[in-house]
Image 1 (tube, rainbow, N blue to C red):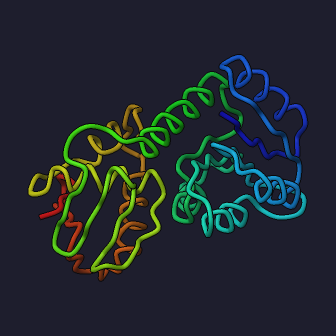
Image 2: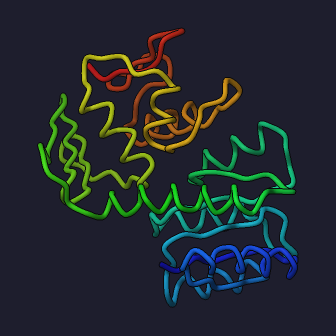
Length: 226
């Protein structure tokens, strides 16, 4: 698998490359947003690590542009620790974020987790392959999702969340359980990741914010699809 690393600091890209190559991944290093977009248009990677602060454009803009076409996992690398910056990245399509300075071993673990889910997303698995819930149809074999016959362009993370909720329709799943099943990591109380992805899913499902029809919030408990 190939990973694109975008950061204008050469020392960081070299460090990340060493750790990722030790795990058997191929690495492409880019130092500007323009260079990264050109590289991806010629040969999309299996995952992209995007720095937020770049000399020519910010990582959020690059992420937003990539999500118009591609569904591969995107992890943001940011020196910003404010919650709104993290929420902004997740809202525009990033799957995860890591704040600088970061532990290379943690970054490698996050990369592995994202690629495991992306691989499952692109492979067939045994069991019930199609779920239909009130005009929503989600196909695990083809990884297509439609609402009243209209195709929905979901990222692998969004697909995994929606499949899990549909598979357990009628049951309430906590944010903690969703995070630990989908991200494969320990949930923290201050983690807004699930909330942001649910909000993005509702937007794609064209759900009214105050009274969503498909993905229901059970306050203080979690989320469910009836």
